[in-house]
Figure 1 (cartoon, rainbow over the protein chains, first blue to last red):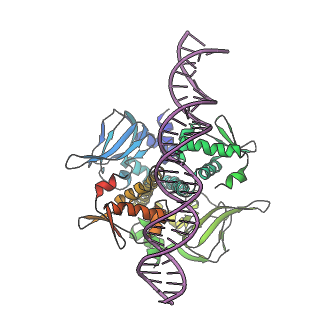
Figure 2: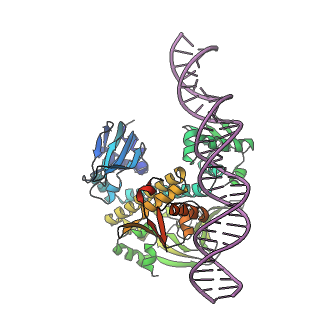
Figure 3: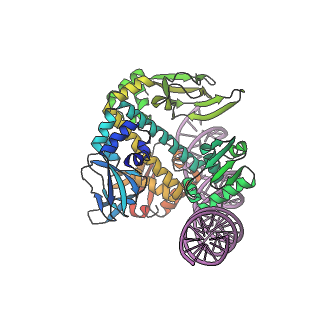
Length: 221
Length: 221
DNA sequence: CGTTGCGTTGATCTCTATCAAAAAAGGTGG
DNA sequence: CCACCTTTTTTGATAGAGATCAACGCAACG
């Protein structure tokens, strides 16, 4: 997979026009970190932010007494130190790889320049942000208001696609990941699926879930 | 409350510099809608987006057969039709007040102009978005990983302020709202508070929660 | 003083995480 | 293609967290 393709997988960049993406590819860098390698230290000048392709990176502080406190552990798919892009001049904490990791490093100033002299890009990014905000708020609502069956029903209805008159949801990964995405565990997820299958509301084939009765499914939300 | 103050309450605008906010106040409009009044129709030119001060507004479509389907019901505090700001030329659905409502109407083009010729504003807005994204992701993690006590502990630790050597969390609204914010109900929230009070980890005074033992509180996360 | 809304407490019941184990699905090598 | 092993998924039994329902204390307020 080349640089450009990898960049497109990062949510923040996924809606960027091709032209800008190529510029971005021009100044971003791919970096590999060995386990325990330090990425940056507290108070270092914040020149870049990062996207994790693989591995894990922790963000931590060390107290005057030498006590270490970990704030966050970022994993593959995360963007981090991005606060540095928009406000801070220095990093607010230390960062160290806790596994061998691969990162994309994006220099802050080049990125800001890219944004600033391209209103269209700005709007695209804002739009991407808006959509993401909306979907996160939606997820929070679901988690706090709905039980597992309802969350599953909602998820299927929101993510299905019509295919030969039928609504089908296809997934690539494992059911375990779907379960986690819905804020539950594989066992409970399996039981929720079973529930709808027994009621003939859905049907499973390989890695497809076919919705047989959308109205009934909706009624569980 | 004047126009400017009201605007500051809208998250999207809350981090805008005063100067720009005043411009915004110059071209936004306050509108009142009677129950059942139509705000815009599907395919109408999308000239504005809206913030709801009070009331409820639904977004809906009508099928060729005359069947109506409601997509969303927006309530006070929501921004809506904001997709229109960033990508679309026309509204993607109809919108109608389902209660008497009051809205702030923000013309899209004026708003875009405000953004576009002010890179600093752009960055501010992006920064605000970033922070909000982060906090929402954090909330999702909490909801799916932590029990009520842990969520309360985390929330208090994240939102407390030092005051005379003590860490204090002050709230303005009701406990009911705090409960909902933590994804639970007043009864359970009250029990969680009681749990920490009995353990002498926190103390309540009026609308303040005083953290007596931060270490112990942390240990519940 | 009644009334109204908020907060707390108690009793109960449901949902779902957990633990344990079986079943099914995928690989792998012969 | 089959036997074997690993991983994923399902099923069952159990326990615990938290929602629900009901009732009461309490303050603000007309």
